[in-house]
Structure formats: C-alpha cells, structure tokens
Image 1 (cartoon, one colour):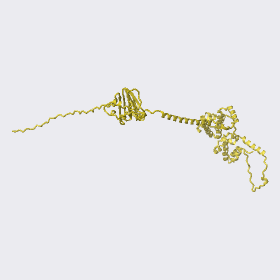
Image 2 (cartoon, one colour):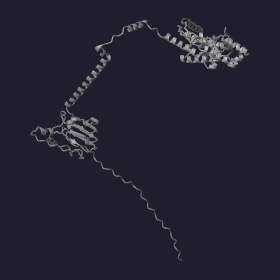
Image 3 (tube, helix red, strand yellow):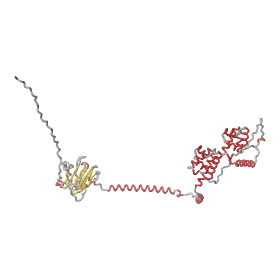
Image 4 (spheres, rainbow, N blue to C red):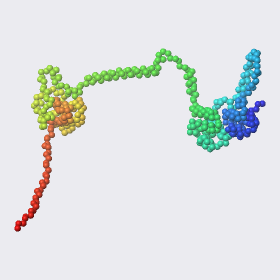
Length: 465
C-alpha cells in the first residue's frame, strides 16, 4: 500500500534527522500545522489552499517531489513512465484501434468522480435553506476556533489589527447586525480572516450568501393572487387590433384635441384683436385733441354767410408784461365771439381749460381751495370752474395752453418763464410784486484827532552891561 502524504513527509524528516522545531524555523510554518500535516489531520488547517501551500513548502525543504505529493493528496493515480527502447518497431496490428467497452469505461469514470466528490474539499456548494443567522454563526465559529487554536486573546488581536474588541466579539458570535454598517462589517471580516491565515475568499463568499439570505428574509411574501393574475394574463394574449382601432389610441386622441384647441384659440385671438381695433376707431377723440383743433376749420366748410370772427392776439399785452394788473376790456370780449372749441362746464362765470404740452409743475386755486397741485401729463385736459376767483401758477409759461371761457389765450410766455394768472370777474390779471428801493449804506462816523499845542523852546537873553 502506498504511504500517505503525511507519512512520506514524516519519513523524510526523520531520515534528515530534523525536529519539528527545526522545520518550523526553516519554512516559517507553525509546529502545530506541521504535526497536522504529518498526521494527515488536514481538517484542522483553516483552508485546503493553505494546506496545499504548507505541503509545497515542506516538500521543497525535504527535497521531495511536490507534484507527486499533491497528486496523491488529490487522489490522482500515478502514471508509471516506461523506458523507451532504443529501436522501437511499430506494427499495424499493434496500432490498430481496439474496440472499447463503453459501459465499463463509463462505470470506471463514474466511480472516479464519486471518489473525488466524497472528499469534503471537493464537495460542491449546494443551496440550502439555512437562514442568514446560521451562516453568520458559522463564520463566527470558524473565527473563534482558529483564534483558540492559535492561543491568542481578543486583546492581543485588537492591538495587532487595530480592530476594536467588541467588533471582534460580535463577529465571533455571529452578530454582524450589531456593527454600524454591513460594508464596515465586510472590511473587518476580511482583515480578521487575513490575520488568522484563513481563506478570505471563502469567508467573504459565505458572508455574501448570508446577506442574500437576509435580503430575501426581509422581503414581504408575494401574495398568490398576483401570481394567479400573471398566469391568467400570460394565458390570455391580446388579439391584434385591426382597422381604425390601431390608430385611435389615447395618445392620438389627446394630441388631436390639443392641436384643435390651439387653432381655435388662435382664431378667437384674431377676432378679439380686430374687434378692439374697430372699437378704438369708433371712440370719440380725446378732449386734448379737440382743443388742439382749429375752431375756424368747420366754419369755412359750412358755407354760411356768418362772418368769420377775428382771432385774439397771441401775445396780449395784458398777460405777463405790464407791471400792474390791467383788466381785460369787457366790451372787446363781448364783441369777439369766436366759436367755442371746448364744451361749456355749466353756469359758472369763470371756466378755465388747461392743456399742457410738457410735464410741468402746476398749481390751481379755485376760490380759497387748492384744486390741483403737482406735475401735469402732456395731452391731458384739466378743467376748473369758479364764481369767485381762479389762480394759475406754473414754472414754465410756454408749456401750457389755457382756454378762459371757451377762448384761447395764446402764447403765455417764453420757455422757462414763470407764470401766474388770476381770473376773476374783472378779467385776467398778472400780479407783479412791488419793487422796493434798495437800501443805501450809511457811512460810519470816524474819530477826529485833537490838535496838539506846539511848544517853543525858550531862548537865553544875552546880558548887556
């Protein structure tokens, strides 16, 4: 009977007269794992891949055939190598293809495959109905068993891996849900497994299966009614539409209604614009436009024999030029009776229309009450009536056109010239301020110097004997 892998390793070590400690120092493998290899206790090694690596290192140090040992570990029979003859002779009968018994070969192949799958490391991973908690506990048991075999405490692992002790305990207990996040749990598991020389890929695969099982557990159960409906819908396939039914869809109807609505809205808007234009043409002109019309234009077209009235002077001397107020002669006003360009405002004795051409400050006082105070809007008409007194005050005489009792007063002054008019029963007056004499400066009194007496020095009178 052929010796096992462990027996061959142990025999080679004894033949080399080396102890287990010498082998451990030479190949850097723990003595516990070397004893497990020699005694064929491969299940005590964390992973099969790690065991194969240990065998390869141990066999190289003992100068054994690594390939033959690994083949023996995998259960593959050794192929004997026959020596070639110096002058090989080939016959056609020997090289002829012999009939092969298919059943016998198939049975042998099945037996070999079954023997391979009987080993635990070659068992395929079958889907089981284990829960996520069971998978987490399985991972934790592997971590704890490996740590206990290495005789390392949790505090020592915390110092070496910088992983908190409570996280290590949670992983060994299978309480991965107590870790703040599953992503962090995966990283901690990878670092812990790498420190213990475990198969990191297999542990992470088991961890992924546990997460998948946990996700399925958290999903709500699908009711059977929906599955029945799906079966009925799949059984009843809709019949293909034909004719107009293919075109009369919901999208087509909605789009058609939208387009028709837009067209009708455009037509209605056009009619509204046309009607507003005709209404604007039919409206009467504004008062300002009426005031600006020539009052004598309609008289010439009428063709009557009424003589044309003489238009008053545009710059009457009684407005804004005389230092004293000169009332308008009522006889002249009575004789001149032009056609009124503005409508009458009632029975008031004084009627004033003001039409500004520019924006200008204007203050109008009727009686003792201020009727208007502010800036005017060009083109607007401002009518005022009173039986006592109307006073007009403006900062620009050329910007105003004033009608007094349906009579145009003409140009009232130059641009920028202040204007002040008073309309009363006597007529139109332009008050002027009385000119006061300029005060003369009185010369101040000056001090007069007093005269000083002139002193004559005395002279010595000569003595005559």
